[in-house]
Amino acid sequence: MRLSHVAASALLILASGPSHTEPRRFKIDPDHFSVGFLVEHAGYDKTLGMFQRARGTFVYDEAEQTLHSGEVTVQAGSVFTNHTERDGHLRGDDFLNADDYPTIRFNATELTLNQDREGTLTGDLTLLGTTREIELQVTINKTGRYPFGDNAYVLGASARGTIERSRFGMGYGVDGDLVGDEVELILEFEAVRQPEE
Image (cartoon, helix red, strand yellow):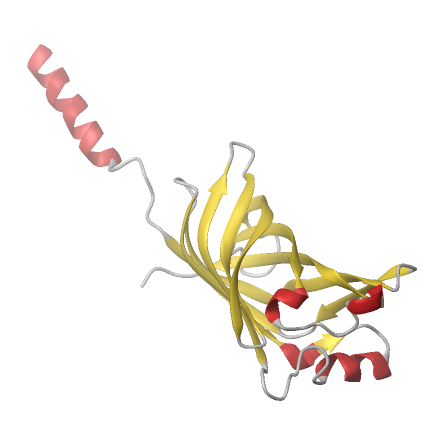
């Protein structure tokens, strides 16, 4: 009886498999991806803008809370602040120079999370052909089966950070404090876990 009990226990352990999961690829849903920013305007207020075209993917192990890779690309020419003349200026040489540098890119390198799934996302931001390391404060809001559509597995997250645009060669309006040097970044997204290959 004792030997049978041990054998049954061993079979149960083997059947349960390893306790950790494998990293999985996630694709950010473009319909639920907001890339926004806030920039001070001559000290009076902050202009709120966004980019209307962005995409991204990442490889993430949810059980280990480990990010293996991640990339976000933003189309500079899709900038929108609800003001036609200002948007044209932002696309031009004084700011984003979208003709020469059509893509803004962020490559994630490290993610550190606490028990509440809040922490720091570190990566390389390439803007106007210049690449610099930045940090974003990130919160994973929710993971689970989506209540709409095909019931896919979805991860939703929020991220915030601040950069100095002059460090990327975008100095227009910094002198005289006409346009703020600090740019507050705002990211909100839902990402769909992709089928295993």
